[in-house]
Image (tube, rainbow, N blue to C red):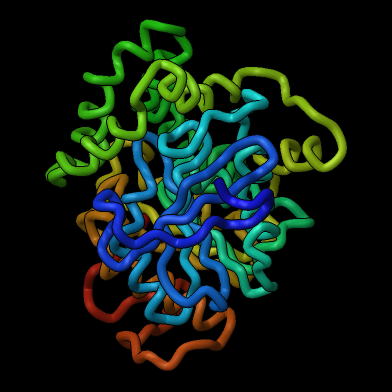
Amino acid sequence: MATEGKPSEHRRSDPGVPDGAEAITLELPAVTLRAFAWGPVDGPLALCLHGFPDTAHSWRHLGPLLAAQGYRVVAPFTRGYAPSTVAVDGDYHVGALMSDAIEIHRVLEADNRAVVIGHDWGALTANGLAAYGDSPYAAVVSMAVPPVGAFTSVSDNTAQLVKLLARQSVMSWYMMFVQVPRMSERSLDRLIPLLWRRWSPGYDADGDVRQVFAALPDRGHRSAVLGYYRATLRPARGDGRDHRMRSAAFGRVLTPLLYLHGEVDGCMQSGFAGRAAKVLPAGSETHVVADAGHFLHLERPEVVGELIVGHLRRKFMIGNRVLDRLGTSRDGQMRVGYGHLRALESR
């Protein structure tokens, strides 16, 4: 067992650990998290947060890439996903996930160059941290779930928003289904492969799905990960900092961020990315990645990795590796000069 509040010794021999990664344990106040780590221990922290139905294995491509840029990449199995524990406080609200991210920053004694990178539920967490004034993360990357303003702003093209929301309500049917206790836990054996097929059409997810089921070995863990969705319909708990984080979870983004979305995402429509670009603060970037679905960082890891590294380089002016040339269009949208991305102004 790790010393309270400190990561355990690294272990390299676990066959379940991706190539080049280490396995670490993080003792947080409400949960014990297992995580993969890449890169120098004294490098700036890059915290990578997965979503549903997914695991820390999702970062097997981006972890080594960011480590090569000098980052200490840490990708935990978030609360409820084995081998991490279920939360002793039973809290799976986005605010609790934000708290875990802040505690990881503290435990690892990270500095003011830390970046948080989130996908799906990890994106909700990252978006919340970008809206939280006391977040220790200087840079934010969010993928596949845009900040709340993309869904609520009516200042531009209301007709488009109504159309997007109508279709999204149908695409998000599973969010109501998983509110049903016991039955939805039992259904995950069928639901999880179905979601991967629909959300990232054409991507071979067999290995990823096996990792997801390994992270859900019993009813306790299954109920925990479905608790993320169930918590969205329950009143927020806590006071003080916890209350502020829960309030910020769906608030206006304050920190400029990089937002990425797959063009053929079957979970969340890519049309929301264009709307996100109009509500994010100055210094933000938004890209739709062509020929990628919901799990864009697995389907197009080279493109996604170059966009993230490029964004962080521009923000921190670090690193000495040469990326493909980036240019800025007349409307201010960042473009990649090798044809993998599509401009947003057409959306």
